[in-house]
Amino acid sequence: MRFVLASASPARLSVLRSAGIEPLVQVSGVDEDAVAASLTDPAPAELVTALAQAKAEAVAAECAEPDAVIVGCDSMLLLADGEIVGKPGTPEVAAKRWAQHSGSSAELLTGHAIIRVRDGKITDRTSGHLGTTVHFGTPTEDEINAYIATGEPLNVAGGFTLEGFGGWFIEGVDGDPSSVLGISLPLTRKLLADLGLTITHLWTTPA
Image 1 (cartoon, rainbow, N blue to C red):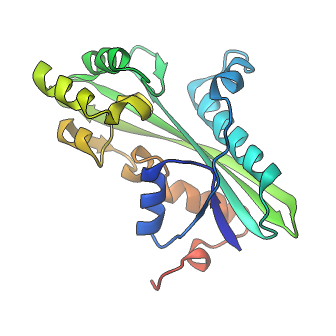
Image 2 (cartoon, rainbow, N blue to C red; image 1 turned 90 degrees about the vertical axis):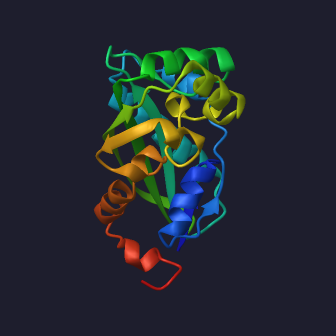
């Protein structure tokens, strides 16, 4: 049985590899804006879960693996004022995000969806979400500008990373650190268990 990661995220791939999983990476190509627009006033947790489901479904429709679990993920940052934000995309938006983040806390929401494929057919589905509180430091303007200049924050949820350059400016997390990296190992294990699967059976390296 193959573990298929429906994501191009290097961080998610790295987390899985470090935890004993060597996934087959198959990017969904889902139009996230279109999926979000199709929803009627979703709660933040519903939004990230729906996006994860859309990615998993898109990959399942194209997956050539006859026996697989397909894992879709999505992450967004819920700010203290209730605004939910994704990837900044531009330096200007990243600078705005860090002006909001500095000295504050926010909740990183991660949605996961898993689809079970047997004999080339979808046999089961499950999904869930997890929230982790991130406590931001107070970098100087020069530090923020230097961070944005690396390009790292432009294409990650909320405009920060925990494992990269952004880690210098994160003072702590309350909850699951792996979810901040993009894929929650505890949540993934629980969702697989919902489908009758044991994560240790998917490991590609000895315990």
